[in-house]
Length: 213
Image (tube, rainbow, N blue to C red; front, side):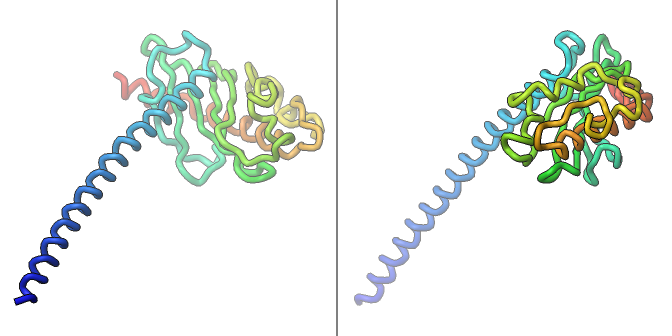
């Protein structure tokens, strides 16, 4: 008679454990979903801040993250598609922000945001991610130095072709003491992004006007 009692006890314990496991899994799923939502919102806000640092206030009136396209071209420095954000003003494209990669940094790829106005002038450049040496190559960050602002207002003709290099290579841009590879890579990447925009501006902006028409 003892065996049935043991079986009922084991069954009861199994049911309790099963219900506990189901409740735990459900709770974890709810927490993960809530956390994922907060992370996504935080990432979106960070992207908006980064994009708004590049384009002058009042130069666009749309939500940049809602006007993005995927681009795939070697001039943007990556084998993977790169995101671009189209800025609109009164229904017309006013600028584009390209995500590009400087693949030849000292410690690997340097991820960049490159803002280009409709007239071909650079609105600004910012570094999204890098692994360059602290105290040397990390001066590409705006928080560490103003070097990245040396691109503001530049274009394919300012400087001329041979000026798109660091001064050590007889170009127009400063290098860092003890770190030439990093700024050289960024200058090269920005120059290529300008070349890409110059060759594709009509198609880029025409596609955006059509999608908003």
